[in-house]
Image (cartoon, rainbow, N blue to C red; front, side, top):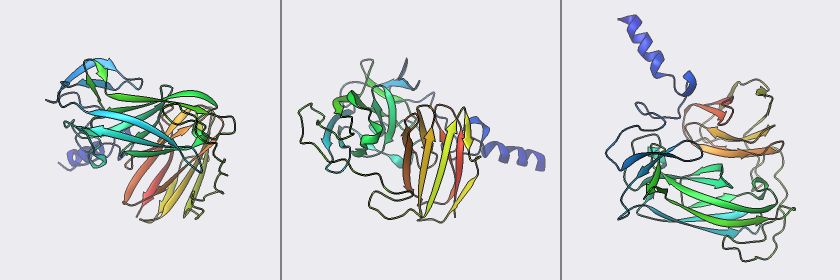
Length: 280
């Protein structure tokens, strides 16, 4: 009996790839394969999440509006109907009219959104014209769909070589904005230093320095500064925070840890563990 108990305990401590993770809630998979909500289709989004079709009457709706930020980048507003953001239920079953959103730039995922507002830094947008897309998802990571098409909204955006946003989401030119200087090493955008700074690089499928554990106290802030040699997405499990990693450019994710536990930081495309946040 003791051996069986130990075996079950070990199985419960593993998640994606067999590593300890807090990405999914106990008893759920990354994509719920069954459920009475809507109809699962074979159609998938660019990240292979299946569509979950529901009737048009009462289906979720979303509109996207962009406004240039006076200091840096753009402020995005998601206006939703028949839908509510449920960050505390991510990883659970699909509930009608609930979930989160994905933000894509030209079909490449930038972030997962858990509220109606999001700030898009200019550093994440290369110069030139682009298409931003927001798509609504259920808590089980299936994409809400109506008549075979995903529930989504798009907006056009043009970035200048200097990184300042010259246009709103509807395409009308906006007054030029000054280019904000990047925050100093380990500093928040407001200038206050983070309690901890973790600087990492990913090259040829290897993480440097080697993955380890970053000890933090609840309520502290951490700056994750990552440079990848290929386009990827950083993901903090448990907090479900994501950050686009442009190839060859340093990107920084600022996070205040407000819950205790062990949380993995990894890359989505390459599946590499960068570090583990241990919050006490």
